[in-house]
Structures are given as structure tokens and as C-alpha cells.
View 1: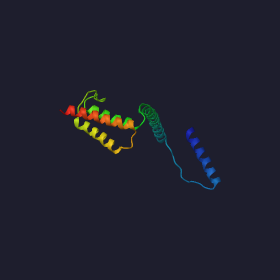
View 2: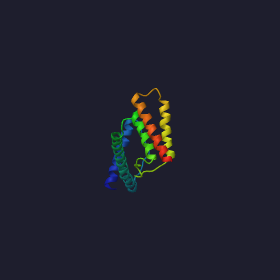
View 3: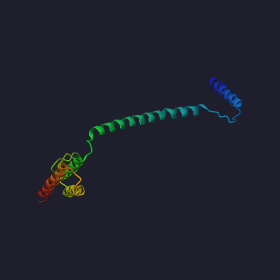
View 4: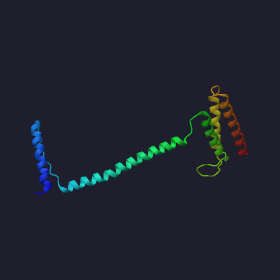
Length: 152
């Protein structure tokens, strides 16, 4: 009998004695061979990188969220209206598409954004301060002029 087997047997005997003292006894004996122990050890070592990669992923996600928070401007009406205007200008070919790095004309898409601005102006009538009202009216007017010029 090897030293390890002796230690396992001693442990089992101590457990049995402890269980008898507590008033319950389990009569199931398991024999664990070395191949089982090796497979368990391999599984544990394979689980560690998964846990580490999950931790790394969580840290990277937190860092990305912090960067996103720093980059994004405050959400307010003028910024929202400006973003719609920028989309319309980009589709009119007035400014470069940041993804393709080209000036592209898509009149249908630009008309869509102009229509959104017009609808927004109508739905918010009476609820805007004078600066916001002036901003949306001027932007809508400028975009309509550019749209008509491109359509010719």
C-alpha cells in the first residue's frame, strides 16, 4: 500500500469515526484512482484561464464604458437637433462620411432627416426657448435650400 493510499484510508477512518459520534454514518465508499485525480487536476487548470479571461473581459468592458462616458457629449435638445442636421448634411454630400471618408450624396436619406427636423419643430412648437426655436428653423431652412440645389 502506497503512502498516499495509507493517508486516504486514515482520513476515511477518521471521517467514519466522526460521523458515528455525530449520530449518522454513510456506508458508501469511493475508490478514487490516479487517472481520475489527474483528470480533475486538468479540468481545474483549464478552468483557471477561463476565469482569468472573464476577469480580463470585465475589466476591459469597464474601461470601455469609462471611455464612452468621456467621449459622449451631454444629451440636450441643441445637440440632438445638431446630430440630425449633421446626418442630413452628410447625406447631401456637404460633409465627409466619417466611416467611408468620402463625400456621398443620398437625397432620399437627407430628405428623411429634413422631414424628421420638420416634424420635431411642429411637435415641439410652444415648448422651446427662443434660441432652440431659432436654431431648428435656421437649420431646417439651410438644409432645404441645399437639398433643392442638389436635386437640380
